[in-house]
Length: 194
Image (tube, rainbow, N blue to C red; front, side):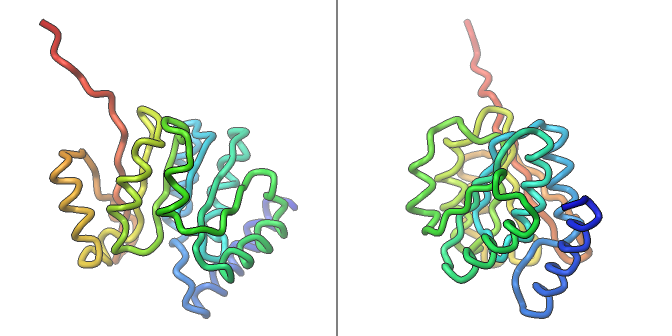
């Protein structure tokens, strides 16, 4: 599939998502994620929340350029099957691994310090749990991006409490007129040497 055909497919998939109330990321967020994967040379990407595969396709396009892969976890069998079909249509199956499971059970099965990039966009009230489970799986200087942190902040209060308690540095990037993402970089801990 050509780049133009993929762009057309993504546009149609985004419109389908809007018409059918599928919670896909915005086009601005999709571009931001692709750019961040490109500049960080991320190869191993974890996505929590696949929906119909719109975000997964965007992540996979960036991973393909880095010779990488996206592992995407989705709880809903229906959404998982839609995503599988959509990803197959744009010939990105080799750059994705779709998992139909509860992310809370599946994340612990990954090796620590494996992922370069983690994108969390599922069940907002469990965002803190997803972050807590996935942080050990992230390499140093890797990125965690959490979607919808402005629009649904009231559903994510435990996430903000967790970040404050653990003293995790973060930035809120207002990518859209009504929403944005949280960006966390897993930093080296600097220890005093005396």
